[in-house]
Image (cartoon, rainbow, N blue to C red; front, side, top):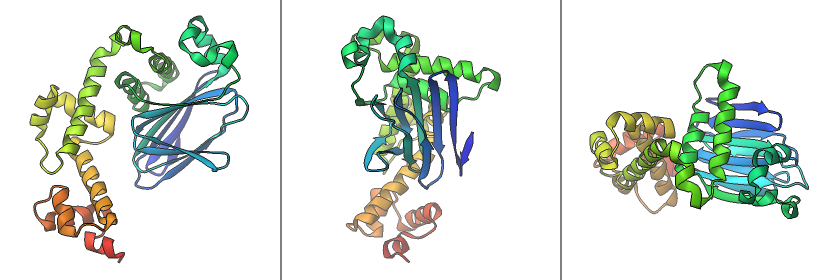
Length: 291
């Protein structure tokens, strides 16, 4: 695993023609990552948290991939090396599958995968989509792998195959296909709901007990699940969101310090100033003036 400051980059070979790339940037700064990929590979990009910018044609063409979204990229006529920038506090996974390997996985069910048909085999594909709750479970299990290294390759293979099956799962079969993952999927929905609630009510957020009751998840599962999915405690995540939003409001030039403090839930300016300084190392006023 290659360290990127307080983050890490890891490329794992599952088997011939099948790789998993895991990137985690835990810093406030943007991190760069490059990995050569030739035109025989289909690329599946997943942004679990934060935001990623993918660059192609030596930076002349760029795609932005935000949290909980995915891209499928395939171009048989040209190489598409992975050249990306991970913004601060971003988790990203890329699955690389050679077209030969891909055919061996799906050929019995080629009707479910449009670009496997003979008339489409030379076409290029750029498909964007959202990460379903069941896919998010498998992705977070890949990202937070903590089992014995001796079974790592087997574990990654199983999770990667699971991810591919969920990615290409047709809507009409969704209930049947997702059956083994229904509990995890439902919990993932509840955790995502918890995030939405605290962001929507950041000026007056519920207590953890109130939040767990509202989403229908035990306090223990809420704490553990939120930390696994978003990499922080509920209130740690909320504080990060508040400070980021406060900085955006200050940057807009439309609000003074007191107004911004109130908008992000601080009843007194001194508490807001203290929190802002702890996060950014400067007061809101000095941040505005650039001093």
